[in-house]
Image (cartoon, rainbow, N blue to C red; front, top):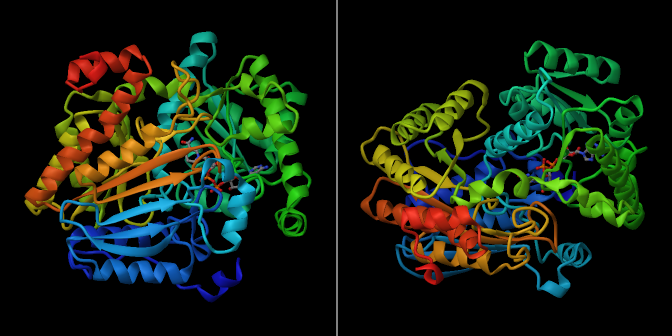
Amino acid sequence: MSGEAKQHRRTIRAPRGPERSCRGWIQEAALRMLHNNLDPEVAERPEDLVVYGGTGKAARSWEAFDVIARELRDLADDETLLIQSGKAVGRFRTHPDAPRVLLANSNLVGRWATWEEFRRLEGLGLIMYGQMTAGSWIYIGSQGIVQGTYETFVAARKAHEARVPSREGRWLLTAGLGGMGGAQPLAATMAGMACLGIEIDPTRIEKRLRTRYIDERIDDLDRALAAVEESARSGKPRSIAMCANAADVFPELVRRGITPDLVTEQTAAHDPLIGYIPPGLSLDEAAALRARDPQEYVARAKQGMRIEVEAMLEMKARGAEVFDYGNNIRTCAQEAGCERAFDIHGFVPAYIRDLFCQGKGPFRWVALSGDPEDIRATDQAVLEAMPHDTDLHRWIEKAQQHIAFQGLPSRICWLGYGDRARVGLAFNELVRTGKVKAPIVIGRDHLDCGSVASPFRETEAMKDGSDAIADWALLNALVNTAAGASWVSFHHGGGVGIGNSLHAGMVVVADGTEAAARRLERVLTSDPGMGIIRHADAGYETAIQVAEDKGVHVPHRS
Ligand code: NAD
């Protein structure tokens, strides 16, 4: 815990209910979502303002947090607050349809976009790592990633089934059970598989047990393997967490000749100084080395990643479906000498890109009332708006059964172009007619179809080689601003670390008014539309076809 953290042991929790302390519901929504990001049920290390993803923060310091909250309470309906790396820096008169908040987090000019420079500036108190939804105030706990993880695991399982059809039950090996990674065991069991998750920090395992994301902790490898194999064989999916270092367990499985069906990992490898514990060190020893000799720490962390990735490569050679799950571990392993690290494919080109071509991506919403019944009402509205989508119906049912809310009640599902606007308008009607008790916040991850440039993840191996072109992410932020999103953010380094990605986020509030309906229709059309035009421009047939079918204007193709 940092020195500042010790002074700030207060518990942050979003206000609830139909009364607001801000001058408008959009400002109130931003205030509640900022608080919600730091709710101890939601955030990984709230005392340090860290929400998830290594060091992804909601505000630069506690002083900055207090000033943002004060500014939001005072913000008029025709003003826009500017946030620079987690600190309020200005406020201008704009107009009621403009975003109430614009946020820029962690951005650096290309040549200076390194962790070293970032940390130097962070040390001076000038910049903050915003990850994706931490600095843009729309994190909803591990649920935020469950459906994406579920979709990914189902696609990976099908790929394995196509190659190895004879096997009965299947199991997944993974590592890292933090803010995002903690969703993996639940997504695996929802996808009908057993799961063994290796996590070095026992407090993270406890949190996942508490929130029902994991079924059981077994630290003895023989017993853990027996439990997983029994679960796979009996067809009763169970998830087992084992407290150990992945760089020890993965190669040990190779030595024993044990090959899982699916293999991935989600330690916070994108940040080798903070996010990966080198093998041979306890958590306390790692913290001491990090403070004493950061260079040595990074070298040892990358060596650990090399060992782990080499084991993954061997499992791939033995028939496992192995994939990188978006944390840049391949780059770090390669830097440490694993030349074939990129023989492991990334999850986006392998399983997700086709959805992006259809403008599909994560769509999340939060009930500002704090009442879980309001999420029930929105679930029902989604099912009624999408009567023929059986996968979606199954997902909502599973989510209702298995997902415990963290902080303000929320939901996520993947929706495409046209459907997002339809559902957004349905939510606005629920608010207008009093069927929910307060407005609904609608947002998404930056990991979406048309909002990211990330050559090791969302834009890996693009058909036209445009992986590193970030114009698309900027255009996404600009068009959402023009369309009237409630807050819009532009970040650097999310998911895969500083120097490796640029991405945009948006949130739009359904407050039941006609003005909100117009904004929702515009934003929830142009935002997924960006995914279609981005992929049509890159030459993907599906995107070109979807643009044609749905009337998305692509100038060079009309
Ligand atoms: P986090 O910091 O909350 O959790 C990382 C976890 O890894 C921690 O619990 C840590 O104890 C554990 N860990 C570190 N080294 C380990 C080791 N050697 N062995 C076993 N466990 C170890 O991060 P998070 O929010 O869970 O994110 C994980 C990664 O996924 C990050 O790199 C993030 O950028 C990336 N990410 C991916 C997606 C996606 O859709 N694929 C989305 C968001 C984030």
